Length: 277
Figure 1 (tube, rainbow, N blue to C red):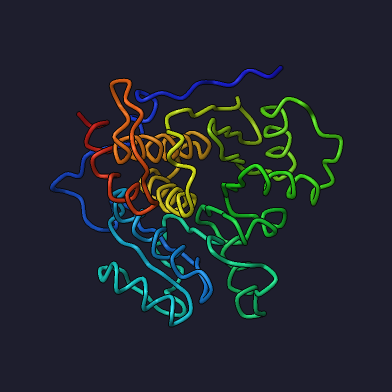
Figure 2: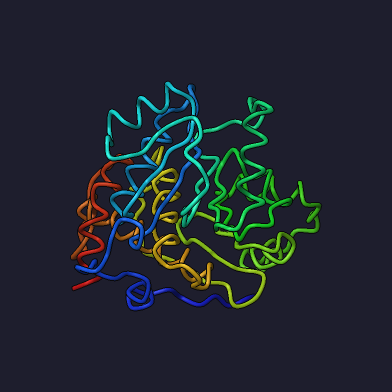
């Protein structure tokens, strides 16, 4: 059985820093999202909220007008439009709340341009089919079912019974970082060890928390240019889980209480403050 490196609070702290008087909105990280759809506008709202709450200095959103309106109603600080440009973007987030079967030719061209660029990309949900053709640095974020379907699409049919080995094998096949979401999230790049992040709570098993995670990952990646992508993704995952524990009141042996995805996003500043302390 493959061993995985257990990720810790101390590991996460290496990728979290307090803003200084010398910072501006660009130095704190620019995140651009092309997520959500008229059928699922909430995915865009949650991802944008999470990117802001995780410390991004500038968040851009590109999408259809109905979704732009929903994003700006919640987060008017966001720069929104059908195409917000490619310059000065520290990380992209794509795919959350989208269906590849509904993808238009224009949307396909825009997404292909993103995954062929130079900025790192968080590839979630409805954009997972684009991972095999990506040349930009990227992190794919499948849950268990999506992981199985992606493995089949890649022709990795002789499945290993060791999930960590499967994650490593997929990362090598894709030449990118694979983040398999779950109660114990496993992360691997083409090289290096598998990382295990076990910092969340069962209350995270609710709709929309994956959209929040994608936004967190975008913010942490944008704030750490040039850092090892698998480790940065692990830090973002740990923060997401820690925010969920704070939101659910899990601590001191307590069982906690139900939460919704927006609760996790709103608890991110507390999670970051806790790490910085």
